[in-house]
Image (cartoon, rainbow, N blue to C red; front, top):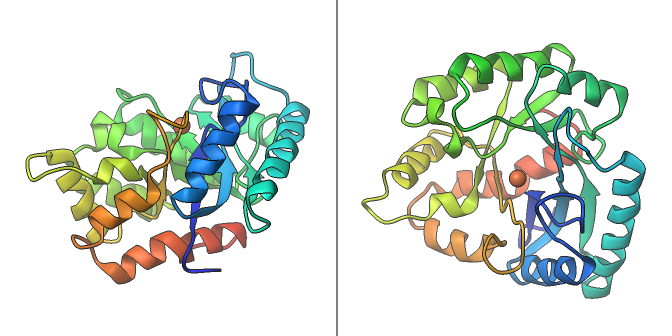
Length: 243
Ligand SMILES: [Fe+2]
């Protein structure tokens, strides 16, 4: 894998399917922004929630192909794969098993989000449900979950269970007084964050700021581990291997 470039494995770049990009025009702006931030691999992860009106898998595959055509106009090295950001509910494991929702880039990895106020037990049992079915769960933006804030031992327990941890890279950036950013840096330096992503929803406000954030955090974290998170871990995911 080319170590100058990044993988963004959580973003809402497919047009018109969730609360992310509303149309192809905005999607192209998001692609340009991601490219300028050093991203060359994207896994598009539209929201999927059981009981909601989700875009069909055929529609998502068709959109991925269209977005990849636009990405290739920017660079032939710009790749778009498909996943879903699965909102946790007990039924969502079956939805993935049945093929109604996507794993990450065709691998055993899945991206699952919980509600900010879900209990620790809900998060633990949810991740365990995927593991028991042979999936490798990535817990999306764990900084949002009250049950995991300043609870390092719980994050450790989830990793020991077999889950991986994703943080939105923008959440790592914060001043001395930002307790959450401080906590995330601590988690990071203990090897307890496995993936960074943008969770971009548009090209301006909730956007991809990979390079900006990396420039900010690289003096404050273990640089060897930073390289592992930015390059090695996404490569292992694409190869469907454990980290
Ligand atoms: Fe998201």
